[in-house]
Picture 1 (cartoon, rainbow, N blue to C red):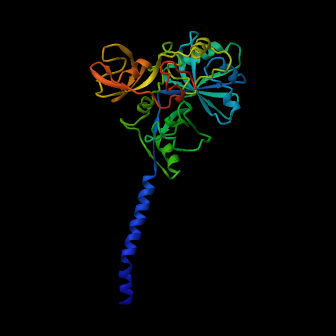
Picture 2 (tube, helix red, strand yellow; picture 1 turned 135 degrees about the vertical axis):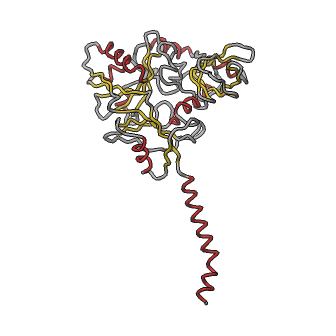
Picture 3 (cartoon, rainbow, N blue to C red; picture 1 turned 90 degrees about the vertical axis):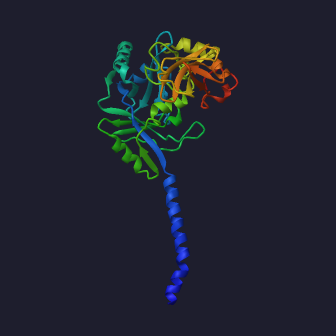
Length: 352
């Protein structure tokens, strides 16, 4: 009887302990970082190999390619190929490899052949191999949908090399997440298992409300030839300077003269900016964005259900509280990731 009475005496304590343990387990589950892994079939890889690969690219792209080998902290970089008039031909991400004579180029799948022809045209007598690499490696992205502009990047995974997978923080904007180059036979399940081993990560598929394209539009980032048709826009209009994609101290490269002149005069009146719809129109792409009195403010270059990306006259857009696309209302907000020192200079904005 004494034992039974003692047992009953401790029942409230035991119940409280069990509730506490349950709460701890729930907290641990709540602390799990949710990441989305998404394949990017619209992106393709090109491999450049040869002793002159760095010098060769240095004369063709906007960024300082030498940093891929000089700086051990740089494993990938954003760079644009321009035409002689200084307009964007191709937006790319360059990747360092273990082989100092080899660089991988990520580009829009639709211009992969065209970019290889462009590279061969300028190769002249250099001994360089320029090969498609899409049969060997595919491009994926992994990001935390809960990270917004005001939050520091949550650590998804440490950068690492392996035989078949390469992961790098997106060189344009950290909150875009990671870029993954994985062997072509890797599927979603293989990458999900890799992240699941971290213990604190829950992996999910993209959804119509949360996906890479929608995320790019949230931050105001264009990608590929549909949003940046070859020969149409200038690199600073595409925020290449804000996205770590232009080095203004390197030597000459194709299209450099106009880019440098615009930068040093300081006038960039139009830039890519995120747009949000109050009432989403049925089809917003390529539609004009206008002020309430009908003055053109910009053009939408890409849209999802409730977000869009536009080439916008910055000063004019920010002076209007409300804009229009057809009969629908929308508004433009200056991205918080733009350099703060330009907060008081809307249409006269230089690179960071």
